[in-house]
Length: 217
Image (cartoon, rainbow, N blue to C red; front, side):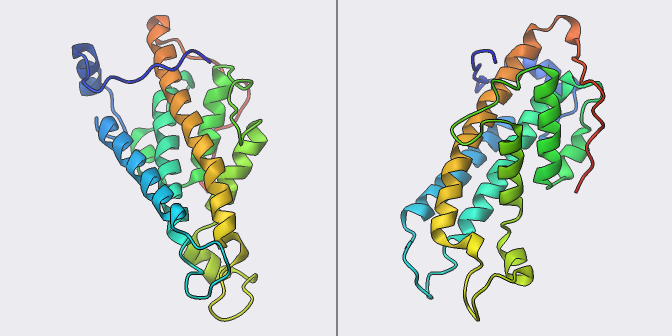
């Protein structure tokens, strides 16, 4: 993977011209969304710092907002990477579809196609991710931790007022550490893709073999 290239805070004239002609899922608000995502992660860390990790009926659901904050942050990081990298695919992702979807699994499938297209599989790893299987597993785990869905559909509650096991504060803290590493990886990869695209003569795309387009779940 190329050295990370930070996106400038003030767009150059060339970048402004591109943003006026190319459709973007964020409508040119990439910097604002980046700042918002950073605030989501900061808020999640503040909540974690004040969690009571001991069993306590009064604070049993205090970790649940952390899950929602990380889920929103991951969704936006995935969209940013797809936005930077889908040009490497034979059929770039439609920006309206990218804006409207909230499926982490679908976004992760697109990310996988992009990483394979640029042949960065061996570099797409971090402390919590050793391969694509780990990446998919972590995304699926977070996707399945929606607090309301867990309460409505869970059979793992011990009784009235108890929290589903996946939302217990120690488990939330553990997945938060893994997600922090993944978010850093996605951010660095998005910047590397932007740098790689700048160096491609004529916007040449990579092939992705016989992979079928992913479907929204």
